Length: 457
Image (cartoon, rainbow, N blue to C red; front, side):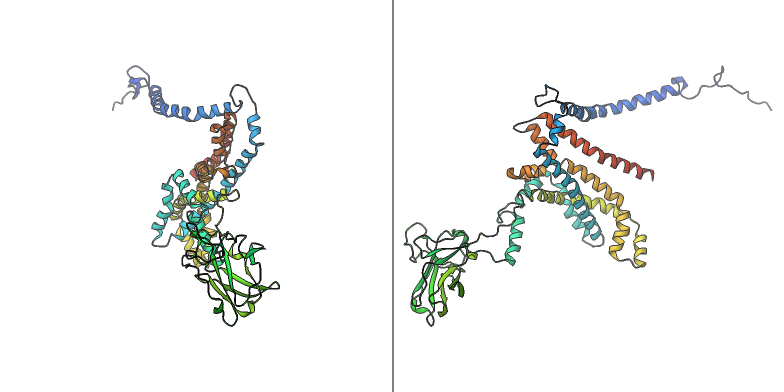
């Protein structure tokens, strides 16, 4: 049988490999590289124009002075660690970077675990996640109203004042006071006392002014002066009323028809520094004391006149940063919950059931099995939130009032103020931008390393 002759590649008459007619494999590879570059070039141009160039220019500008004409060296960076305002921003950023991601992640973990077995868990997760659909601007406006100092407007103080007044008696007539012509004088400590002792058979008059109509009890009635003889068994009768007539008119120390009683005003009869009797004014201001009050001085204790409790100054210098962090957690706890719930769905249930069979309680299962298995997801959430809070700006700018912005200051806000404020210094602003970049880079490097480690598994 005849065999086909061997053909040496490259010899005359040998068949050409595929693609040789089009220039060979090198030309094919080169064309693919050209196509890849063509597709990537627009993205690279945008990346260079929007990321690389601004970073490079910011680094360059940070070494120049305020005008940008003279080289300043490291002066702008030295200012970051010597200026009290910027140091406050650095300290607050450190608080943000530690507290906000930790609290949001912890709440997300708790919500994800607790809602895993309940039927309404999906609805609850939806409610918790809904704030993520709200912009930072809108959330800032919402919480600026929530933290309003006036309990009639601010939800936080309305709740706080309600709880406080449940356990502590509030003042009935703050800022009420007598006139010089009234039979009362200051007794020290905010109390008032009659100028002379009261006697049985006489009507004790306790007039006051300075009570706004809005603070008068709703069921107060026109003041009524009882008869001196109405005192039982030689007791003391009298009237406590608001000695003020709307629209003018009326006489001091006299109960006029349009004047109302000070319902609930506390009255004490004092002899030789000892309280011998107490009472409260009725709706028409009338009151009665027992015979033991004969010859006593009538005292209106300071508890009648102390300022009403108006809640906590949430946006004051000491609480403004925790208050704003609370609004951030309200927005981002849902984000953490959704990611953790997705990771929780992939946790092997056999391990949990085996632990329960071995006698582990739910806390031990959570601490020794659930949390360790969720560690990669928790790391993702923590790193993502940490990067996010390093550049927090909107909430601080909107929620913090002007009087407390220096106390709530963060680096992103200080960057805005230094670059675009009334006394703008673009050199310092660029230095702050570079500092923020340097703070983010280690977190990003950690995240990339962790992702590569996970990919190798």
